[in-house]
Image (cartoon, rainbow over all chains, first blue to last red; front, top):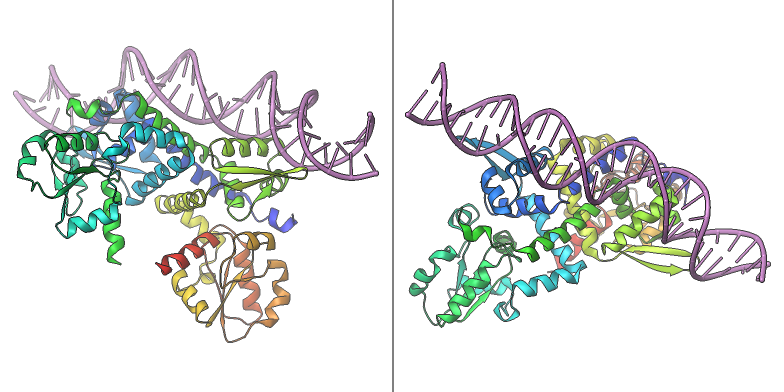
Length: 224
Length: 224
DNA sequence: AGATTATTCAATAGATTGCTTGAATGGTCA
DNA sequence: TGACCATTCAAGCAATCTATTGAATAATCT
């Protein structure tokens, strides 16, 4: 190993790795990942996040502050509440990439996914083809997240129907169209429950594992 | 916030976040990021890495073991040495994404980059256009990394000329072609030094910040 | 077999992190 | 103004992480 190779990294460059490392470290906590997962659907107040994750308010606040300090989140005031939001789409993108990599590297996660998502519920078609069919009006795409989530990160072509309203709304569906459902991503169970409900009602229904973010990425990939 | 939203994450799902978090945490140390940076160029032995990063052998070994335990690296024996390598291209991809995000989120890093890379050295053309010009034989692309690195992660269309040999090899270049140089990525100084050398020799030379991985990604993006 | 070499293991100290508790802040509303 | 509310702050303890040291291992060579 030559001497030149070694001394190409003086102090300054070390600091670069420290800085990048801090961001990675900030992602390295299950509590904070849950927060990112929630915020990648829609902005939320501290209390909302605390309630959804089951962590204490103080703890949640501190995690949020750390995420904000590292630049991943931004906060705005809204009356008494402080609303946190993802600062850049690239944050969501990295979170998705991290999930992908984690799943590739540990089969445990694939096992976890199949446990959450009964394999028979999953769409035999890839997301790209499904989106094509939806665009050609040959299939229905349903977004069963909470309505405030669907409103914040909508998927074009999808019908936003919160899980609670699905039983009502399903009556308006054409029986001869395949129905595809998505929720918050791979490890969200709402879509599975929705597919079961739809099948019981006689529909040909499947679940997509993709999140709104990925589905939208497919759409824009297509444009260019 | 509805009760249903809350109880959608039972124990199992918590474990998923723990697992993903462990991978992120593994990326959260400057020492390990330096290792990833080195290994994303080519496989290396423990000692080689230790020497390049300046960390002790024992410490390097432990970091490598942790990276391997989390599934990011794989190890093979070669005589007395143990050669570590990146296990999946997605690991390199995530490392690149992390750098991109870090740079977007903290201007400090952009400052660091401009400090390393004098702005006048940088290519006015984007990497994609440069690659096009190279393909059309209107420009020369030079890879100044160590030869064992270029051999392991080659960039098609690039001339692999280690920095040490550049002074010799430059005589074979056509004076009227623009020369573009890359090394290990954004924070590697070899390319800057090479550009200075080339300019002193009368060439119209620029540096690319992209790594071999990204340059190859551009090439395959193009195919589909 | 014994010496050599590259790597790993084991034990340790200091620093950092995660969560809890209870008090403090600083907007908002009557 | 004072009461109220969502959030933050400050202090503390247990658990984890990092780098160091010196010994142990395991493959190779004479």
